[in-house]
Amino acid sequence: MSTDAIPEDGTPLERASLIDYPSAFPIKVMGAQAEGFEAAVVEVARRFDPAFDPATIERRPSKAGNYLGLTLTVTATSRGQLDELYRALSSHPMVKVVL
Image (cartoon, rainbow, N blue to C red; front, side, top):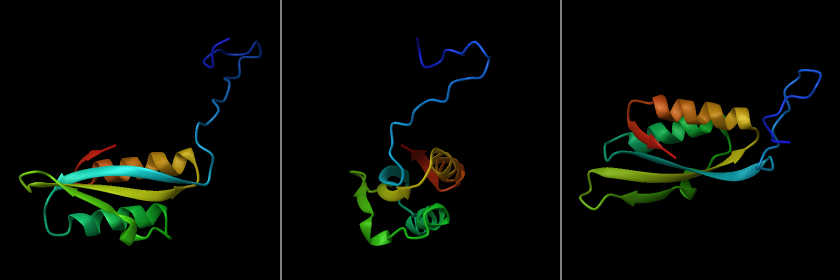
């Protein structure tokens, strides 16, 4: 039986999470190398993980220096928290890509 099957009573099965919560969860964020980009990303991360430490950010500038890749490691507490964090980062005007 696949995980998408619906039991005879009609209630959908809940999928098991592949992540144990809470856990350290890396998120990659890319945007233009611009004043305020990193601070904006940190502000969003702290909304979802108040204990997030900006000193743990890994930075990778592009070869030409036009873009900056940031790897943030947040404490994930639920699937909902991660979904909302991805939405908030993806919709930020300074962010180009979230992985």
